[in-house]
Amino acid sequence: MDQKLEREAIQQLRRSYGDVGLADIPGDPFNLFHMWLKDGVSNPLIVEANAMVLSTVDGDQPVSRTVLLKDAEKSFTFFTNYNSRKATEISKSPHVSLLFPWYAMERQVIVLGEARKVSPEVSDQYFQTRPWGSQIGAWSSEQSQDLNSRDELEVRFKEFAAKYPEGTKVPTPPHWGGYEVIPSSIEFWQGRYSRLHDRVRYTIDLTDSTIWNVKRINP
Ligand SMILES: Cc1cc2nc3c(=O)[nH]c(=O)nc-3n(C[C@H](O)[C@H](O)[C@H](O)COP(=O)(O)O)c2cc1C
Image 1 (cartoon, rainbow, N blue to C red):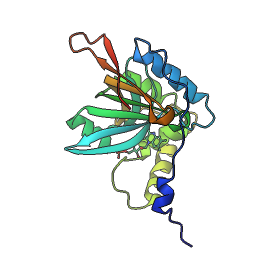
Image 2: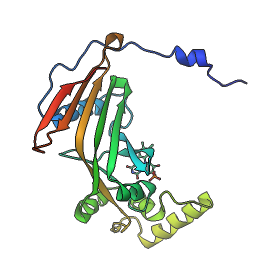
Image 3: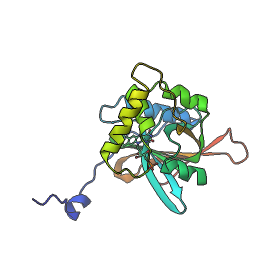
């Protein structure tokens, strides 16, 4: 059976966006971000509202993958394996992009900034809140490295599960921790009628990094 979606069918995929625009533009982009994140969390059509696409660069090759936002005070925090591909790329170039794809709300947020490791205390604090299985998973996975078979991973999981049984304190792996992305630009996109979308971009002032400048951008 032919499962392919023909080009014409793909080209016909379009929807009309709503009439609710970005009327109130607060001075601090984190206020708007938190309003939108809250909307996402309470929207049953949005799966994992805190999922964001992290792009790093490998030389001049951009590389993207999804990670989960775990804190958004004045920066955007996620946790990962410090030996992973993304971590290697960040160690060579801290310039990253984050994209929140909130299609069901006809919204998108794009952050540009620099990633840096959070303190071991912050990583440790979060690691201890994770379910036991995720903690053992973090010990077991040599993230981004080749794996000979699924069995190899399952065996490593069993070994660490025996070493750190459920109900005991699992230490934070030395190769695991957080990054925070310090934003220099945050862009909010709200879908509107006739493709006249709202785009609002905040950028850090070049002379005073506590000040956000805000501009509307053509859609
Ligand atoms: C919804 C979703 C959430 C994810 N969250 C994380 C995360 O918080 N941290 C992480 O290291 N990987 C997460 N992943 C897996 C990454 O997308 C990726 O496969 C992994 O981090 C290895 O990336 P790298 O080889 O480019 O370093 C998530 C994947 C999905 C689909």
